[in-house]
Length: 263
Length: 238
Image 1 (tube, rainbow over the protein chains, first blue to last red):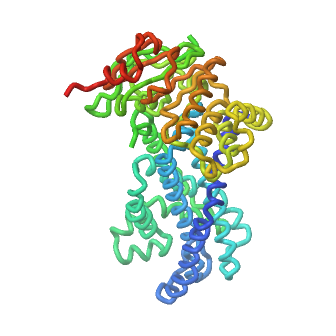
Image 2 (cartoon, chains in turn blue, cyan):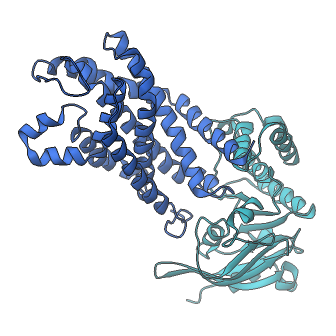
Image 3 (spheres, rainbow over the protein chains, first blue to last red):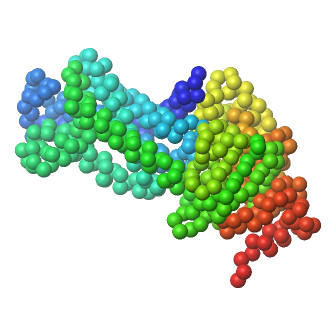
């Protein structure tokens, strides 16, 4: 086996092992979107009227509307969680082991990204299965069609996590990420309400939502779940992935960082 | 040259100069002690040697490979034991070593054979299935040294590997690593403890970012105890 494949398998396996060891993380990752789906959406469905917008062809319940957004939420949280684990790795020194291996640095970071995406996708499918058990279902083939969309969204949000981890120097600063990255990204998107609803209230907020890469990740997943394809969302998501990845590679450049610095 | 060669290496954190034209050589199969008080620049030097930090000033060559020009070839020849433990405490010793082996492209039977050999060298084979968390400080260190040997590196770097260990564990690890040097591995051992240096060892004294002395420990001491020589030469005038 090539050294690249060997290292990829090892890094993904370690991410998976670490995830399994943290059972609370798995439970929390599932409980969060389920609360939104089964409590928030139930209370909200009466307040929010939805018209028929693509990719939907009939009237849908609010629960059905927010499922793709909650898939995105799982991936957003997971991306940030892996970023947290990278900062932890750096504080604990295990990052040094990765960065001093004779593999190109971009490959090491790519392996980390694949590992975090795999975990994200697994969580999303678990969530979709539970939602289906509660009667919130998608077209059967949609579950399969969503896989590439979920991978794109997972890589995009993982790359964002990677980028943040290269700039966050200490674990304590992580609470700020929650407030300044996760919440604005989630609420300023089409995850909980369609963009035309937002436009009715504020044109300005609507334009922010339309620029937010998370909106495009959610739309990509939404269209795929209904066996439809949203080309614009894909291009936006890929563009954002490229920007996040290039910035993260720059962030991890040894000439720039003080990774070896004693703290 | 097959050992380690550092030439005119300088590095600064902003205005603070951490390394100032540092040069020294460690021949193949030599045990070189890098002795310096806290803050002398040892850890910065280690970060440069392991490419966690890079600097345009100076060159580092590992087993004949220039670290800046051929970083992957040079890193493949390096075994590194960091000052801070880098074992994953939730994994067993063997899982930790397998993970590391994979980062060096080793897998399957080849990796298993090398892991066994490395653990055996450090008398850790019997503990390979214990979780790293269950090991005491001395055994964790040994597991880390074994890990650094899996890919058969030409040069072994250890950054204050005995910090926090009791006297017996310290002596055992120092002896183990001296034996590795006798068997042909080039060793750079950073420390601030003079009793870890044998008279026949190569010695580099680092102080305030500069090399104060380089040579055989016995030559540098010239009959005086190393402790006294070290304290005298690194004393900062009041």
